[in-house]
Image (cartoon, one colour):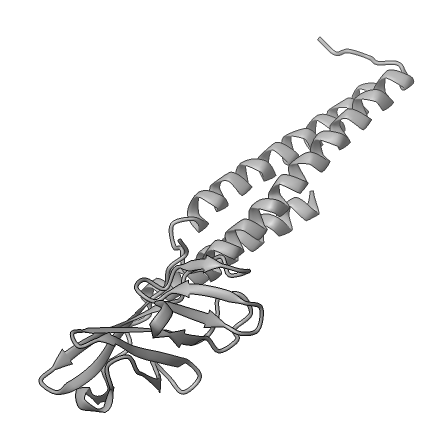
Length: 76
Length: 135
C-alpha cells in the first residue's frame, strides 16, 4: 500500500532521517579513531570487528537513502 | 553516504595494514652487548630492529635484564630509566613507566613501552623480538 504524505510531513521524515544519518556518521568517525588508536598501540584484534560494525553502519545509511528515494517517488 | 563509505574504506585500510604487519617476518636476533659490559643498576643504549628504533637495556640486578623501546608512547620522546626508583621517566611531559613491565604509571602516556625480548647466551646478550602492547 503506497502512502502519500503531505509535504510538511515529508519534510519531518526527511529531517528525522538526516538526524539518524548524522548520528551514524559520528559513530563511524569515533570508531575509526578508536581503531586507529588501538592499531598504533599494537592491538591486532580490533580492526576486524570494527570493520564489520562500520559496514553495518554503511548498510544502515544505504537503507535510509533507499527509503528517501522511495518517499520521493510516491509523490510522483 | 559518501562520508559513511569513506569511513568504511578507512576501516578496511586499517585492517589491511594490520594484516600486513602480522605477515611481516620477525626481525632476526641481534647481539646487543656482552653481559660484562652492563653494570648492575646500569643501562645500555642500542638500536633494534633497525637504526631508526632506539632502545634501552637495563640491568636492575645481577640476574635481571629488561629492554624496551626508548620512544615514549605519548609523543616519542626519549625515556630515561631510573633504576633506584624502579621507574622509567619521560622528561618531556613527566610520564612514568614501571621498570619491571614498561606499563604507564603516571602522566600522559596511555600505552606501555614496546618490550624488547632479550636472551643471554653465554656471556652475550641478544635482542630477539619486539612485543607491541596496547594495554
